[in-house]
Image (cartoon, rainbow, N blue to C red; front, top):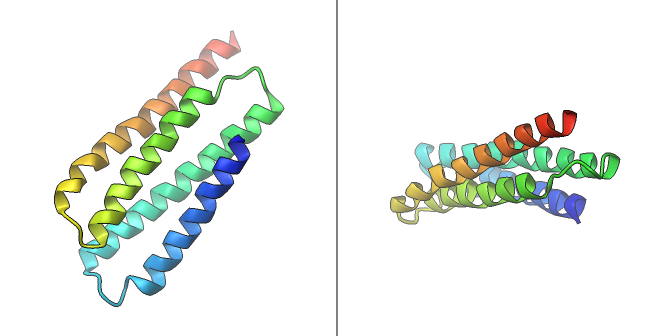
Length: 121
């Protein structure tokens, strides 16, 4: 299941990246394009991170990835979706959600680090 979710994230990142590169340019401002680009970059980085976690789960099933994975996935949704929505011209107030998504991503990676230190003992 973890690999499938990771693969879906990566497929969506490609789709959104392609839309930003081809479909969005005709009507978006430079600021909107920058938001889209940032969302897509973070989407890719974290989707690849999720894939690495999924592979880690296959190779080291005793290493707990569930909660870091979920936190990072929530972070992707909040962070990237809020930037995508703003880039499409919807209310900028949704930008207030972006840092919440970032905080979820950070929490997921920090939890992973903490679990890795615990697991190494």
